[in-house]
Image (cartoon, one colour):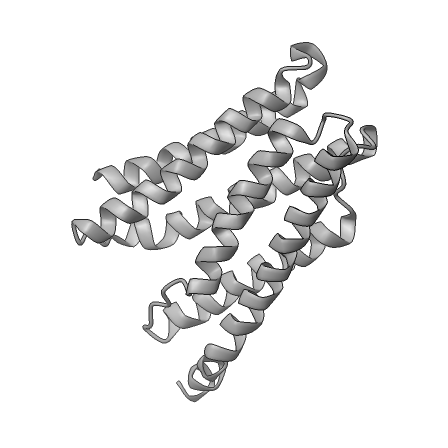
Amino acid sequence: MNVPNRLTTLRMILIPVMVVLYLFEDTIGAMTFMIMGIIFVIASVTDFFDGHIARKNNIVTTFGKFMDPLADKLLIISALLIFMDAAFYNSSIWMPFWFVLLIVGRELMVTSIRLVAVGTGKLIAASHLGKYKTALSMVAFAYYFFLMPIENLSVQITGVVLMLGVLFLTLLSGIDYLLKNKTLFYESEKK
C-alpha cells in the first residue's frame, strides 16, 4: 500500500476513535473535546498530505479515488453529528438540526454525482470551491472541538460565524458541482 492510501486508511481509523471517545465523554471528562480536537486535526492533516503526496508523485489508485473522498465525508459527518448531539447538552454549542441536514444532503448529492460519473467512465476532480469549503470546514470544526465548550460570548459568536461560512461555501460549492455536472444525468440515460 502506498503512502497516500496509508494516510487515507489512518483517517478512516481515526473517525471511529473520535466517535468512541465522544460516547465515553462522561467517563473521560473535560478533556474529551480537546482529545477529539487533536484527533480531528490529525485526520485533517492526513487529508492534506495524502492528496499532496499523490499529486506530487502521480499516484492514482482505485482505492484512493474511492476512499479519499469517502473518508473526508465520514470525517465531516461524524464531527457534525457529535456537535449536534453535544448541542443538546451544552447551550454554548450552536449546531441546529437543519444545519447538519443541509451539509449532509450536499455531501450525499456530490457522492451521487460522482457515482453517476463513474458509471459513464468519468472522474470528477474536486473544484476550487469544494477545496475552500473543505479547508474552512476543517478550521471551523477544529475551532468547535477546542473552543466551543467554553462559555464565552465572543468565542460562541466566532464559532457561529465560522459555521455559517462553512454552510455558505457548502451550498455554493454544491450548486456549482451540480451545474457543472448536470449533463452526466443525460449521458447516463443514453447508455
